[in-house]
Length: 278
Image 1: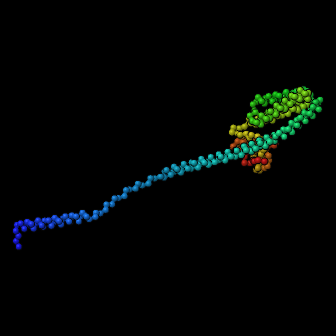
Image 2: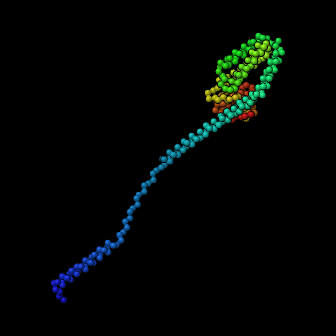
Image 3: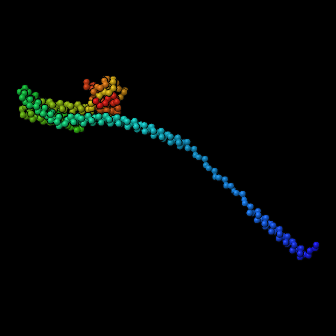
């Protein structure tokens, strides 16, 4: 079969169009295929820092705080022990002040008046010169005590006031020619001055860091074979032994040691855990 030129050209165009359509279809099919998912790698996690040095520093700080806490606890225990001793001292002071109540003072004043009256009956046995001498000594003693400036607490001021009162009563009895009564009262005034001086002298002997009780404190030994030492420490020489239940008088304390005096007049220091309230 033969074709004309026009038909041939037409046939070629049809074939070309067919292949063009096929190419377009193939292209569409290729682009519509699902693409492989792109996997994004996870970011790298940084390695945790080394905290061993920080933990060690923290542990060291905790150990230092614990040591400081133990030291503070020890200091507080010592303070509590000292406060207990001071409480005993103040209780003794209160008891002493109660013993100085109005009723007791009235009885004492009544006794003094009775003695003065009795001395008045025996005035012939007492010399005026002796009474005058005792009165002068009492005046000098009271004035000297005031010059020392020792009235730094209520008890001392009360005792000095009592000495003044006795001295004034002695002067009045001397003026009334009751020389026996004047002599007795002057001697009482001198005894009062000596008592104040003895207590003040104990204060002046205090060691550095020693705290005096508000009032001499009656204490009892609670252990057997208690050592009485020359000073407040185990390094001091033992000067005596105290028996259990023996009563002593405490005057002061330093740290864990108490200065005491026995009934026999022996002085020394005792560890505070070996003594207590009677």
